[in-house]
Amino acid sequence: MKKNLLWKVLFIVATLVVFVWGIFLGTDPQKSIEAIKTRGIVAGIQQNIHLGLDLRGGTHLILQVQVNDAVNAETDQTIERLKDALKKKNIAFGDIVKLDPAAAPQKIVLRGVDIGAAGDLRSLIQDQFAEYDLVSGSDNSWNVVLKPAVLETIKKRAVEQAVETIRNRIDQLGVSEPIIQEHSLGEHQILVQLPGVDDPARVKEVMQSTAMLEIRLGLDNGRAYRSEQEALAAHGGILPPDAVIIKGKPKAGTDSGEVYYLISRVSAVSGRDLRSAEAGREENGRPDVIFTLTRDGGDRFYNFTSAHVGEPLAIVLDGKVQEIANIKEPIRDTGRISGSFTEQQTKDLSMVLRSGALPASIKYLEERTVGPSLGADSIEKGVRAALVGLIAVMAFMLIYYRFAGINADFALILNLVILLGFLGFTGATLTLPGIAGLILTVGMGVDSNVLIFERIREELRNGKTPPSAVEQGFKQAWVTIVDTHVTTIVSAAILFLFGTGPVKGFAVTLTFGLLANLFTAVFVSRTIFDSILNRHQHGEALSI
Image (tube, rainbow, N blue to C red):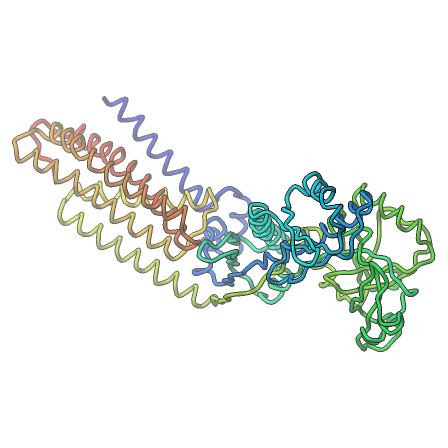
Protein backbone atom coordinates (compact mmCIF):
# COMPACT_ATOMS: atom_id res chain seq x y z
CA MET A 1 0.00 0.00 0.00
CA LYS A 2 2.69 2.45 1.05
CA LYS A 3 4.81 1.55 -1.98
CA ASN A 4 1.92 2.12 -4.39
CA LEU A 5 1.12 5.39 -2.65
CA LEU A 6 4.72 6.58 -3.06
CA TRP A 7 4.65 5.90 -6.79
CA LYS A 8 1.36 7.75 -7.13
CA VAL A 9 2.76 10.79 -5.29
CA LEU A 10 5.90 10.76 -7.44
CA PHE A 11 3.76 10.57 -10.59
CA ILE A 12 1.67 13.57 -9.48
CA VAL A 13 4.81 15.60 -8.67
CA ALA A 14 6.37 14.69 -12.03
CA THR A 15 3.16 15.75 -13.82
CA LEU A 16 3.16 19.05 -11.94
CA VAL A 17 6.81 19.71 -12.87
CA VAL A 18 6.24 18.89 -16.55
CA PHE A 19 3.31 21.26 -16.96
CA VAL A 20 4.95 24.05 -14.94
CA TRP A 21 7.81 23.70 -17.43
CA GLY A 22 5.26 24.11 -20.24
CA ILE A 23 3.97 27.35 -18.71
CA PHE A 24 7.31 29.06 -18.14
CA LEU A 25 9.70 27.43 -20.65
CA GLY A 26 7.49 25.76 -23.28
CA THR A 27 9.03 24.06 -26.31
CA ASP A 28 11.81 26.66 -26.69
CA PRO A 29 13.39 27.16 -23.24
CA GLN A 30 16.17 29.43 -24.55
CA LYS A 31 13.75 32.03 -25.97
CA SER A 32 11.59 31.83 -22.85
CA ILE A 33 14.58 32.40 -20.53
CA GLU A 34 15.70 35.38 -22.65
CA ALA A 35 12.17 36.84 -22.48
CA ILE A 36 12.06 36.38 -18.69
CA LYS A 37 15.46 38.01 -18.24
CA THR A 38 14.74 41.00 -20.45
CA ARG A 39 11.00 41.59 -19.94
CA GLY A 40 9.97 39.66 -16.83
CA ILE A 41 8.07 36.49 -15.94
CA VAL A 42 4.82 37.60 -17.61
CA ALA A 43 6.64 38.05 -20.93
CA GLY A 44 8.14 34.58 -20.52
CA ILE A 45 4.69 33.08 -20.05
CA GLN A 46 3.33 34.99 -23.05
CA GLN A 47 6.22 33.59 -25.09
CA ASN A 48 4.65 30.13 -24.66
CA ILE A 49 0.95 30.83 -24.18
CA HIS A 50 -0.13 32.64 -27.33
CA LEU A 51 -2.91 35.18 -26.99
CA GLY A 52 -5.68 35.41 -29.55
CA LEU A 53 -6.90 38.44 -31.46
CA ASP A 54 -9.41 39.46 -28.78
CA LEU A 55 -6.71 39.52 -26.08
CA ARG A 56 -3.67 40.75 -27.99
CA GLY A 57 -5.29 43.09 -30.49
CA GLY A 58 -4.92 42.90 -34.26
CA THR A 59 -6.96 42.70 -37.46
CA HIS A 60 -10.05 40.64 -38.29
CA LEU A 61 -10.93 40.24 -41.98
CA ILE A 62 -13.53 38.33 -43.94
CA LEU A 63 -12.65 37.94 -47.61
CA GLN A 64 -14.63 36.58 -50.53
CA VAL A 65 -12.85 34.81 -53.37
CA GLN A 66 -14.15 35.91 -56.75
CA VAL A 67 -14.26 32.34 -58.04
CA ASN A 68 -15.48 33.38 -61.49
CA ASP A 69 -11.98 34.74 -62.11
CA ALA A 70 -10.62 31.20 -61.77
CA VAL A 71 -13.33 29.86 -64.08
CA ASN A 72 -12.52 32.57 -66.65
CA ALA A 73 -8.81 31.68 -66.50
CA GLU A 74 -9.69 28.04 -67.16
CA THR A 75 -11.96 28.78 -70.11
CA ASP A 76 -9.53 31.36 -71.56
CA GLN A 77 -6.86 28.67 -71.70
CA THR A 78 -9.40 26.28 -73.21
CA ILE A 79 -10.15 28.76 -76.01
CA GLU A 80 -6.46 28.80 -77.04
CA ARG A 81 -6.23 25.01 -76.80
CA LEU A 82 -9.45 24.61 -78.77
CA LYS A 83 -8.20 26.88 -81.57
CA ASP A 84 -5.02 24.81 -81.95
CA ALA A 85 -6.95 21.53 -81.83
CA LEU A 86 -9.46 22.67 -84.48
CA LYS A 87 -6.64 23.74 -86.80
CA LYS A 88 -4.85 20.40 -86.39
CA LYS A 89 -8.09 18.53 -87.17
CA ASN A 90 -8.73 20.81 -90.18
CA ILE A 91 -12.13 21.86 -88.80
CA ALA A 92 -12.97 25.31 -90.16
CA PHE A 93 -14.57 27.80 -87.75
CA GLY A 94 -15.46 31.47 -87.58
CA ASP A 95 -14.58 32.60 -84.09
CA ILE A 96 -14.56 31.43 -80.47
CA VAL A 97 -15.83 33.84 -77.81
CA LYS A 98 -17.34 34.09 -74.35
CA LEU A 99 -20.51 36.15 -74.58
CA ASP A 100 -20.85 36.88 -70.85
CA PRO A 101 -17.60 36.29 -68.88
CA ALA A 102 -19.06 37.89 -65.73
CA ALA A 103 -22.30 35.89 -65.46
CA ALA A 104 -21.43 32.75 -67.46
CA PRO A 105 -17.65 32.28 -67.45
CA GLN A 106 -18.09 28.53 -67.97
CA LYS A 107 -19.67 28.95 -71.43
CA ILE A 108 -17.67 29.18 -74.66
CA VAL A 109 -19.45 29.89 -77.95
CA LEU A 110 -17.98 28.37 -81.13
CA ARG A 111 -19.29 29.89 -84.37
CA GLY A 112 -19.01 29.13 -88.05
CA VAL A 113 -18.47 25.36 -87.92
CA ASP A 114 -19.86 23.59 -90.98
CA ILE A 115 -22.75 21.18 -90.32
CA GLY A 116 -20.82 18.40 -92.00
CA ALA A 117 -18.01 18.74 -89.46
CA ALA A 118 -20.34 18.32 -86.45
CA GLY A 119 -19.31 14.68 -85.95
CA ASP A 120 -15.61 15.54 -85.98
CA LEU A 121 -16.25 18.38 -83.52
CA ARG A 122 -18.09 16.06 -81.11
CA SER A 123 -15.26 13.52 -81.27
CA LEU A 124 -12.69 16.25 -80.64
CA ILE A 125 -14.53 17.56 -77.54
CA GLN A 126 -15.03 14.04 -76.14
CA ASP A 127 -11.38 13.05 -76.69
CA GLN A 128 -9.47 16.21 -75.76
CA PHE A 129 -11.94 18.28 -73.73
CA ALA A 130 -13.72 15.66 -71.62
CA GLU A 131 -14.45 18.18 -68.85
CA TYR A 132 -16.78 20.05 -71.23
CA ASP A 133 -20.23 19.34 -72.71
CA LEU A 134 -20.97 20.24 -76.33
CA VAL A 135 -24.45 21.68 -76.87
CA SER A 136 -25.92 22.84 -80.18
CA GLY A 137 -26.75 26.55 -80.18
CA SER A 138 -28.52 28.97 -82.48
CA ASP A 139 -27.30 30.48 -85.77
CA ASN A 140 -25.01 27.57 -86.62
CA SER A 141 -23.11 27.87 -83.34
CA TRP A 142 -22.03 25.44 -80.62
CA ASN A 143 -21.79 25.97 -76.87
CA VAL A 144 -18.81 24.38 -75.13
CA VAL A 145 -19.80 24.37 -71.45
CA LEU A 146 -17.93 23.18 -68.38
CA LYS A 147 -19.66 20.24 -66.70
CA PRO A 148 -21.35 21.22 -63.39
CA ALA A 149 -19.15 18.91 -61.31
CA VAL A 150 -16.00 20.30 -62.93
CA LEU A 151 -17.24 23.87 -62.42
CA GLU A 152 -17.80 23.29 -58.70
CA THR A 153 -14.38 21.65 -58.39
CA ILE A 154 -12.70 24.70 -59.96
CA LYS A 155 -14.53 27.04 -57.57
CA LYS A 156 -13.73 24.90 -54.52
CA ARG A 157 -10.10 24.58 -55.57
CA ALA A 158 -9.88 28.35 -56.07
CA VAL A 159 -10.93 28.94 -52.45
CA GLU A 160 -8.54 26.26 -51.15
CA GLN A 161 -5.64 27.67 -53.19
CA ALA A 162 -6.47 31.20 -52.03
CA VAL A 163 -6.35 30.05 -48.39
CA GLU A 164 -3.00 28.34 -48.95
CA THR A 165 -1.51 31.28 -50.88
CA ILE A 166 -2.63 33.83 -48.28
CA ARG A 167 -1.27 31.60 -45.50
CA ASN A 168 2.12 31.38 -47.27
CA ARG A 169 2.26 35.16 -47.68
CA ILE A 170 1.24 35.88 -44.07
CA ASP A 171 3.78 33.35 -42.77
CA GLN A 172 6.57 35.07 -44.70
CA LEU A 173 5.51 38.41 -43.24
CA GLY A 174 6.21 36.98 -39.79
CA VAL A 175 2.70 37.33 -38.29
CA SER A 176 2.55 34.98 -35.29
CA GLU A 177 -0.41 32.68 -34.69
CA PRO A 178 -2.60 33.85 -37.59
CA ILE A 179 -5.97 32.21 -38.24
CA ILE A 180 -6.55 31.68 -41.97
CA GLN A 181 -9.35 29.31 -42.91
CA GLU A 182 -12.50 28.91 -44.94
CA HIS A 183 -15.38 30.84 -43.39
CA SER A 184 -18.32 28.46 -43.18
CA LEU A 185 -20.87 31.25 -42.65
CA GLY A 186 -20.64 32.53 -46.25
CA GLU A 187 -20.11 31.24 -49.79
CA HIS A 188 -16.49 31.23 -51.01
CA GLN A 189 -15.37 33.23 -47.98
CA ILE A 190 -12.11 33.21 -45.99
CA LEU A 191 -11.65 34.23 -42.36
CA VAL A 192 -8.32 35.94 -41.57
CA GLN A 193 -7.34 36.96 -38.03
CA LEU A 194 -3.92 38.53 -37.51
CA PRO A 195 -3.01 39.08 -33.83
CA GLY A 196 -0.59 41.91 -33.09
CA VAL A 197 -0.48 43.30 -36.65
CA ASP A 198 0.76 46.92 -36.57
CA ASP A 199 0.49 47.60 -40.32
CA PRO A 200 -2.79 46.08 -41.56
CA ALA A 201 -2.73 48.17 -44.77
CA ARG A 202 0.49 46.52 -45.93
CA VAL A 203 -0.78 43.05 -45.03
CA LYS A 204 -3.97 43.66 -47.01
CA GLU A 205 -1.99 44.85 -50.02
CA VAL A 206 0.22 41.76 -49.94
CA MET A 207 -2.75 39.43 -49.50
CA GLN A 208 -4.89 40.78 -52.32
CA SER A 209 -2.13 41.15 -54.91
CA THR A 210 -2.59 38.49 -57.58
CA ALA A 211 1.05 39.01 -58.66
CA MET A 212 0.56 37.12 -61.91
CA LEU A 213 3.78 37.45 -63.89
CA GLU A 214 3.68 37.01 -67.66
CA ILE A 215 6.40 37.53 -70.24
CA ARG A 216 5.01 38.33 -73.68
CA LEU A 217 6.23 39.56 -77.03
CA GLY A 218 6.01 43.34 -77.51
CA LEU A 219 4.62 44.46 -80.87
CA ASP A 220 5.06 47.65 -82.90
CA ASN A 221 8.73 47.79 -81.79
CA GLY A 222 7.60 48.41 -78.21
CA ARG A 223 5.94 51.71 -79.08
CA ALA A 224 4.04 53.42 -76.25
CA TYR A 225 0.66 54.83 -77.30
CA ARG A 226 -1.17 57.67 -75.51
CA SER A 227 -4.52 55.87 -75.62
CA GLU A 228 -6.19 52.68 -76.77
CA GLN A 229 -7.76 54.59 -79.66
CA GLU A 230 -4.32 55.68 -80.88
CA ALA A 231 -3.11 52.08 -80.81
CA LEU A 232 -6.16 50.94 -82.77
CA ALA A 233 -5.79 53.77 -85.29
CA ALA A 234 -2.22 52.69 -85.99
CA HIS A 235 -3.68 49.43 -87.33
CA GLY A 236 -6.65 50.80 -89.19
CA GLY A 237 -9.04 50.25 -86.29
CA ILE A 238 -8.55 46.48 -86.28
CA LEU A 239 -6.18 44.70 -83.92
CA PRO A 240 -3.79 42.15 -85.41
CA PRO A 241 -4.68 38.51 -84.66
CA ASP A 242 -3.61 37.32 -81.18
CA ALA A 243 -2.74 40.87 -80.05
CA VAL A 244 -4.09 42.87 -77.10
CA ILE A 245 -3.73 46.42 -75.82
CA ILE A 246 -2.57 46.70 -72.20
CA LYS A 247 -1.91 49.73 -70.04
CA GLY A 248 1.64 50.07 -68.82
CA LYS A 249 4.27 52.22 -67.18
CA PRO A 250 5.99 54.82 -69.39
CA LYS A 251 9.57 54.19 -70.42
CA ALA A 252 12.34 55.69 -68.35
CA GLY A 253 13.05 59.34 -69.24
CA THR A 254 9.54 60.06 -70.52
CA ASP A 255 6.70 61.93 -68.81
CA SER A 256 4.42 60.10 -66.39
CA GLY A 257 1.20 60.13 -68.43
CA GLU A 258 -0.78 56.95 -69.10
CA VAL A 259 0.59 54.78 -71.89
CA TYR A 260 -0.62 51.67 -73.70
CA TYR A 261 1.28 48.89 -75.41
CA LEU A 262 0.35 46.39 -78.08
CA ILE A 263 1.58 42.96 -76.99
CA SER A 264 0.93 39.30 -77.81
CA ARG A 265 -2.18 37.72 -76.32
CA VAL A 266 -0.37 34.54 -75.28
CA SER A 267 2.58 34.64 -72.86
CA ALA A 268 5.86 32.84 -73.46
CA VAL A 269 6.22 31.99 -69.77
CA SER A 270 4.20 32.94 -66.68
CA GLY A 271 4.37 32.97 -62.90
CA ARG A 272 3.62 29.24 -62.89
CA ASP A 273 7.07 28.72 -64.41
CA LEU A 274 8.87 30.58 -61.60
CA ARG A 275 11.33 28.69 -59.42
CA SER A 276 12.38 31.61 -57.21
CA ALA A 277 12.23 35.38 -56.91
CA GLU A 278 14.49 37.63 -54.80
CA ALA A 279 14.77 41.34 -54.20
CA GLY A 280 17.97 42.86 -55.62
CA ARG A 281 19.44 45.96 -57.22
CA GLU A 282 20.15 46.81 -60.84
CA GLU A 283 23.46 48.21 -62.14
CA ASN A 284 22.36 51.76 -61.24
CA GLY A 285 21.61 50.75 -57.67
CA ARG A 286 17.82 50.94 -57.95
CA PRO A 287 15.73 48.17 -56.33
CA ASP A 288 14.49 45.43 -58.63
CA VAL A 289 13.39 41.77 -58.53
CA ILE A 290 15.49 38.91 -59.90
CA PHE A 291 13.50 35.83 -60.93
CA THR A 292 14.59 32.34 -61.94
CA LEU A 293 12.52 29.98 -64.09
CA THR A 294 12.04 26.26 -63.80
CA ARG A 295 13.89 23.98 -66.17
CA ASP A 296 10.90 23.55 -68.47
CA GLY A 297 10.08 27.26 -68.32
CA GLY A 298 13.72 28.13 -68.99
CA ASP A 299 13.80 25.92 -72.08
CA ARG A 300 10.66 27.53 -73.47
CA PHE A 301 11.96 31.00 -72.66
CA TYR A 302 15.24 30.21 -74.42
CA ASN A 303 13.42 29.03 -77.56
CA PHE A 304 11.18 32.10 -77.45
CA THR A 305 13.99 34.64 -77.03
CA SER A 306 16.13 32.84 -79.62
CA ALA A 307 13.36 33.28 -82.20
CA HIS A 308 12.85 36.97 -81.36
CA VAL A 309 16.32 38.46 -80.92
CA GLY A 310 16.16 42.21 -81.53
CA GLU A 311 12.43 42.41 -80.81
CA PRO A 312 10.83 43.97 -77.70
CA LEU A 313 9.93 41.87 -74.66
CA ALA A 314 7.05 42.89 -72.37
CA ILE A 315 7.04 41.97 -68.68
CA VAL A 316 3.42 42.02 -67.50
CA LEU A 317 2.53 41.95 -63.82
CA ASP A 318 -1.08 41.88 -62.64
CA GLY A 319 -2.32 42.79 -66.12
CA LYS A 320 -0.08 45.85 -66.45
CA VAL A 321 3.10 46.21 -68.50
CA GLN A 322 5.92 46.86 -66.03
CA GLU A 323 8.79 46.99 -68.46
CA ILE A 324 9.57 46.89 -72.20
CA ALA A 325 13.07 45.83 -73.19
CA ASN A 326 14.72 44.61 -76.39
CA ILE A 327 15.96 41.01 -76.55
CA LYS A 328 19.71 41.38 -77.19
CA GLU A 329 20.50 37.66 -77.00
CA PRO A 330 18.78 34.39 -76.08
CA ILE A 331 17.85 34.19 -72.38
CA ARG A 332 17.38 30.85 -70.63
CA ASP A 333 16.24 30.97 -67.03
CA THR A 334 16.99 34.29 -65.31
CA GLY A 335 15.44 37.74 -65.68
CA ARG A 336 14.84 40.99 -63.83
CA ILE A 337 11.78 43.14 -63.11
CA SER A 338 12.78 46.76 -62.66
CA GLY A 339 10.87 50.01 -62.42
CA SER A 340 9.99 52.71 -59.92
CA PHE A 341 9.98 50.35 -56.92
CA THR A 342 10.92 51.09 -53.34
CA GLU A 343 13.07 48.56 -51.49
CA GLN A 344 10.06 47.40 -49.44
CA GLN A 345 7.97 46.98 -52.60
CA THR A 346 10.60 44.74 -54.21
CA LYS A 347 10.73 42.60 -51.05
CA ASP A 348 6.94 42.28 -51.00
CA LEU A 349 6.76 41.60 -54.74
CA SER A 350 9.42 38.88 -54.62
CA MET A 351 7.69 37.30 -51.62
CA VAL A 352 4.32 37.31 -53.38
CA LEU A 353 5.84 35.81 -56.54
CA ARG A 354 7.48 33.04 -54.48
CA SER A 355 4.23 32.19 -52.71
CA GLY A 356 2.39 31.82 -56.00
CA ALA A 357 -0.36 33.82 -57.62
CA LEU A 358 -3.84 33.94 -56.18
CA PRO A 359 -6.13 31.86 -58.40
CA ALA A 360 -8.74 34.64 -58.28
CA SER A 361 -9.13 38.15 -56.96
CA ILE A 362 -10.52 38.72 -53.47
CA LYS A 363 -13.07 41.16 -52.11
CA TYR A 364 -13.11 42.50 -48.54
CA LEU A 365 -16.50 41.95 -46.93
CA GLU A 366 -15.63 42.85 -43.35
CA GLU A 367 -12.72 44.44 -41.52
CA ARG A 368 -12.40 45.05 -37.79
CA THR A 369 -9.42 46.24 -35.81
CA VAL A 370 -8.99 45.31 -32.16
CA GLY A 371 -6.68 47.76 -30.38
CA PRO A 372 -4.04 46.52 -27.91
CA SER A 373 -5.69 48.54 -25.12
CA LEU A 374 -9.00 46.71 -25.69
CA GLY A 375 -7.11 43.40 -25.66
CA ALA A 376 -5.34 44.34 -22.42
CA ASP A 377 -8.67 45.32 -20.87
CA SER A 378 -10.15 41.97 -21.93
CA ILE A 379 -7.22 40.12 -20.36
CA GLU A 380 -7.53 42.08 -17.12
CA LYS A 381 -11.27 41.47 -16.79
CA GLY A 382 -11.02 37.85 -17.86
CA VAL A 383 -8.19 37.04 -15.46
CA ARG A 384 -9.94 38.97 -12.69
CA ALA A 385 -13.14 36.99 -13.24
CA ALA A 386 -11.19 33.72 -13.22
CA LEU A 387 -9.31 34.62 -10.02
CA VAL A 388 -12.42 35.86 -8.20
CA GLY A 389 -14.31 32.72 -9.17
CA LEU A 390 -11.40 30.48 -8.18
CA ILE A 391 -10.90 32.18 -4.80
CA ALA A 392 -14.64 32.07 -4.03
CA VAL A 393 -14.85 28.39 -4.91
CA MET A 394 -11.73 27.52 -2.91
CA ALA A 395 -13.02 29.42 0.12
CA PHE A 396 -16.37 27.64 -0.09
CA MET A 397 -14.68 24.22 -0.29
CA LEU A 398 -12.51 25.01 2.75
CA ILE A 399 -15.45 26.24 4.85
CA TYR A 400 -17.94 23.57 3.84
CA TYR A 401 -15.68 20.50 3.65
CA ARG A 402 -13.05 21.54 6.21
CA PHE A 403 -9.73 19.69 5.82
CA ALA A 404 -10.99 17.78 2.76
CA GLY A 405 -11.48 21.18 1.12
CA ILE A 406 -7.68 21.56 0.96
CA ASN A 407 -7.69 18.36 -1.08
CA ALA A 408 -10.21 19.84 -3.53
CA ASP A 409 -8.37 23.17 -3.73
CA PHE A 410 -5.07 21.50 -4.53
CA ALA A 411 -6.79 19.46 -7.26
CA LEU A 412 -8.26 22.66 -8.74
CA ILE A 413 -4.89 24.45 -8.79
CA LEU A 414 -3.22 21.42 -10.37
CA ASN A 415 -6.01 21.34 -12.95
CA LEU A 416 -5.26 24.94 -13.99
CA VAL A 417 -1.51 24.27 -14.08
CA ILE A 418 -2.04 21.27 -16.38
CA LEU A 419 -4.34 23.29 -18.67
CA LEU A 420 -1.95 26.25 -18.97
CA GLY A 421 0.99 23.88 -19.46
CA PHE A 422 -0.91 22.19 -22.27
CA LEU A 423 -1.37 25.57 -23.97
CA GLY A 424 2.36 26.23 -23.57
CA PHE A 425 3.42 22.90 -25.07
CA THR A 426 0.97 22.80 -27.98
CA GLY A 427 1.04 26.47 -28.95
CA ALA A 428 -2.79 26.60 -28.87
CA THR A 429 -4.11 30.15 -28.85
CA LEU A 430 -5.80 31.46 -25.70
CA THR A 431 -8.82 33.63 -26.52
CA LEU A 432 -11.36 35.41 -24.33
CA PRO A 433 -13.86 32.55 -24.84
CA GLY A 434 -10.92 30.30 -23.93
CA ILE A 435 -10.75 32.02 -20.55
CA ALA A 436 -14.50 31.33 -20.24
CA GLY A 437 -13.75 27.67 -20.95
CA LEU A 438 -11.10 27.77 -18.23
CA ILE A 439 -13.61 29.18 -15.72
CA LEU A 440 -16.16 26.53 -16.72
CA THR A 441 -13.47 23.90 -16.14
CA VAL A 442 -13.10 25.17 -12.57
CA GLY A 443 -16.85 24.80 -12.11
CA MET A 444 -16.82 21.25 -13.46
CA GLY A 445 -13.88 20.44 -11.18
CA VAL A 446 -15.81 21.66 -8.14
CA ASP A 447 -18.85 19.68 -9.26
CA SER A 448 -16.77 16.49 -9.42
CA ASN A 449 -15.35 17.05 -5.94
CA VAL A 450 -18.79 17.80 -4.50
CA LEU A 451 -20.15 14.56 -5.95
CA ILE A 452 -17.31 12.56 -4.40
CA PHE A 453 -17.37 14.31 -1.04
CA GLU A 454 -21.13 14.01 -0.65
CA ARG A 455 -20.95 10.29 -1.40
CA ILE A 456 -18.21 9.92 1.23
CA ARG A 457 -20.33 11.83 3.74
CA GLU A 458 -23.30 9.61 3.02
CA GLU A 459 -21.22 6.49 3.56
CA LEU A 460 -19.89 7.90 6.85
CA ARG A 461 -23.46 8.63 8.00
CA ASN A 462 -24.33 5.01 7.24
CA GLY A 463 -21.67 3.91 9.70
CA LYS A 464 -18.85 3.01 7.33
CA THR A 465 -15.25 3.43 8.44
CA PRO A 466 -13.30 6.31 6.79
CA PRO A 467 -11.28 4.00 4.46
CA SER A 468 -14.45 2.16 3.40
CA ALA A 469 -16.36 5.42 2.98
CA VAL A 470 -13.63 6.88 0.76
CA GLU A 471 -13.48 3.69 -1.28
CA GLN A 472 -17.25 3.60 -1.86
CA GLY A 473 -17.51 7.35 -2.38
CA PHE A 474 -15.04 7.39 -5.28
CA LYS A 475 -16.42 4.15 -6.71
CA GLN A 476 -20.04 5.31 -6.82
CA ALA A 477 -19.30 8.88 -7.98
CA TRP A 478 -16.97 7.70 -10.76
CA VAL A 479 -19.72 6.66 -13.19
CA THR A 480 -21.56 9.99 -12.83
CA ILE A 481 -18.34 12.01 -13.24
CA VAL A 482 -17.33 10.15 -16.40
CA ASP A 483 -20.85 10.50 -17.84
CA THR A 484 -20.98 14.29 -17.34
CA HIS A 485 -17.44 14.80 -18.63
CA VAL A 486 -17.85 12.64 -21.75
CA THR A 487 -21.10 14.34 -22.80
CA THR A 488 -19.54 17.80 -22.29
CA ILE A 489 -16.38 16.82 -24.22
CA VAL A 490 -18.54 15.58 -27.12
CA SER A 491 -20.33 18.96 -27.16
CA ALA A 492 -16.98 20.77 -27.10
CA ALA A 493 -15.72 18.60 -29.98
CA ILE A 494 -18.74 19.61 -32.07
CA LEU A 495 -18.03 23.27 -31.28
CA PHE A 496 -14.40 22.79 -32.37
CA LEU A 497 -15.35 21.11 -35.66
CA PHE A 498 -18.00 23.61 -36.73
CA GLY A 499 -17.14 26.79 -34.81
CA THR A 500 -15.03 29.79 -35.81
CA GLY A 501 -11.74 30.85 -34.18
CA PRO A 502 -12.95 32.17 -30.77
CA VAL A 503 -15.44 29.31 -30.39
CA LYS A 504 -12.66 26.83 -31.13
CA GLY A 505 -10.57 28.49 -28.40
CA PHE A 506 -13.40 27.87 -25.95
CA ALA A 507 -13.72 24.24 -27.09
CA VAL A 508 -9.96 23.55 -26.79
CA THR A 509 -9.59 24.85 -23.23
CA LEU A 510 -12.81 23.20 -22.11
CA THR A 511 -11.93 19.80 -23.61
CA PHE A 512 -8.43 19.55 -22.20
CA GLY A 513 -9.57 21.12 -18.93
CA LEU A 514 -12.15 18.36 -18.52
CA LEU A 515 -9.58 15.67 -19.32
CA ALA A 516 -7.25 17.22 -16.74
CA ASN A 517 -10.15 17.34 -14.29
CA LEU A 518 -10.71 13.59 -14.60
CA PHE A 519 -7.09 13.13 -13.56
CA THR A 520 -7.11 15.64 -10.68
CA ALA A 521 -10.61 15.05 -9.26
CA VAL A 522 -10.27 11.28 -9.26
CA PHE A 523 -6.63 10.17 -9.26
CA VAL A 524 -5.01 13.10 -7.42
CA SER A 525 -7.84 13.57 -4.94
CA ARG A 526 -7.93 9.83 -4.18
CA THR A 527 -4.17 9.75 -3.67
CA ILE A 528 -4.41 12.62 -1.16
CA PHE A 529 -7.21 10.85 0.74
CA ASP A 530 -5.18 7.63 0.81
CA SER A 531 -2.18 9.56 2.11
CA ILE A 532 -4.30 11.11 4.91
CA LEU A 533 -5.89 7.78 5.81
CA ASN A 534 -2.47 6.15 5.87
CA ARG A 535 -1.55 8.46 8.79
CA HIS A 536 -4.88 8.18 10.60
CA GLN A 537 -5.18 6.27 13.83
CA HIS A 538 -7.79 3.50 13.93
CA GLY A 539 -11.19 5.03 14.70
CA GLU A 540 -10.09 8.62 14.04
CA ALA A 541 -12.75 10.74 12.27
CA LEU A 542 -12.25 12.06 8.74
CA SER A 543 -12.38 15.85 8.43
CA ILE A 544 -15.05 16.26 5.76
